[in-house]
Length: 238
Image 1 (cartoon, helix red, strand yellow):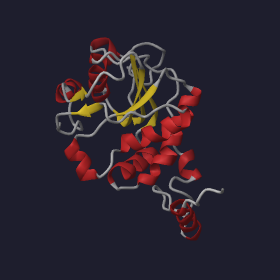
Image 2 (cartoon, rainbow, N blue to C red):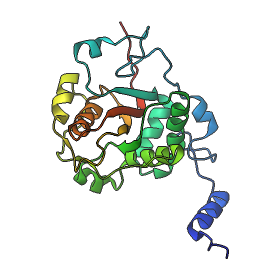
Image 3 (cartoon, one colour):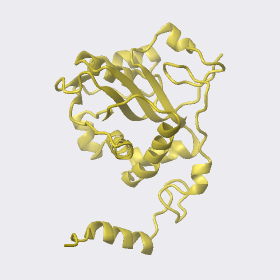
């Protein structure tokens, strides 16, 4: 017996033919993130700091990681938070353009195919319940779902919890960022003990949020924690 058709997928496909999605960046009718805009993204290339993933002149720890090393096993970013990628992430995060999860997730998937990271499960950085209600979705969870489906690994979004609402990290110095998110995350149980976690978020500045998540995961016996984000700000190694 043939399965019943997925009417939602069929109708959505028909709508896409009749009314092609417009690029979230340039607004051309060429998909949610058109090929022209994709070509404008500047990807982060080696060498990078082995710990936080910031671009460096040589493969060594950056001054920030020498002075205040992170406890997470490592962080990697796909591209620079500027231009096309910054605009796309902003629309994805703040303008309810959830469909951007697919093309943005593909960027992360392509990065992982060239730069594999150790992982058994994929875990999104959680939002505080109040922020989740306000926004209606967690952009990190949508990205994690795309990545998990591609690498055929489970996405666990109900173990790592944000238990304290924090002020926005924008404008805070590195030490202030760490203090702002200290103790903001907890794990509901120890079901991830012994596993290698790929922690997913949209952007990273100092790595304070990812590091706080890593600390919560480590407290329940997680073996390794690597962070992967779409973008980070350009940073010059002096």
